[in-house]
Image 1 (tube, rainbow, N blue to C red):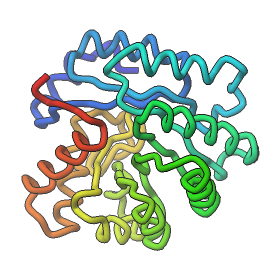
Image 2: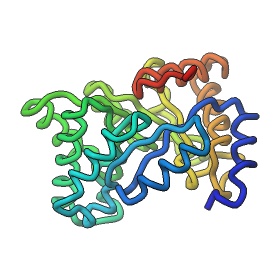
Image 3: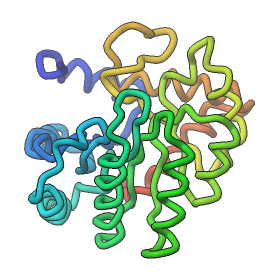
Image 4: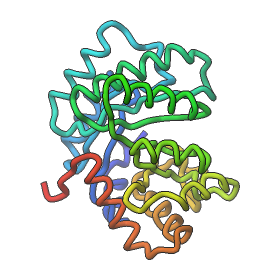
Length: 248
């Protein structure tokens, strides 16, 4: 989707002052293509994992694949995206098993996780709390977050960062906006979820990294802070979570 105009896209994100990108896998077979993209771009880190809507693709070799990929390239900064999606799929038990397997990988490698959660906050909370009790903590981020303030507090209490996409800019996203107001500044992240969910004023178009600036501008206004402050804080938070060094 991005190959034909990749250089133009790169120029636009540089003009928007985006300094580093983190790309999630939805399934391990994407790893080689994302790795090649990182080779080309230079300032791209990535995660490897299996999305809950692809849980049926888990096989007896998937765990080994994720482990090997995650250990083979220092640019792998997280495991994911993983999680639960009860909105689009009914294989709840299978999703939970795949999530638990990936939590174990992240804990073993001491890497953060990128969590997808849709219409499954209570179950996800239960799974994470049980994992914390039985195995240990795993840090990470609630990606493309759309939960209520109450649900948001659950994951803040578990130590997670909360990341908002272009959805927060939508006129009808009042609940998400209320959640965005309560995030401590040192737990806030922003993202695009490319190529989906382009923010206002780009809504309905293909999303791209430069558009994260629109998310930042909206959140800065919503939280009543200067855009420069929010941009610096979210950059610092990403570096802290993913152990990024922007000078490397």
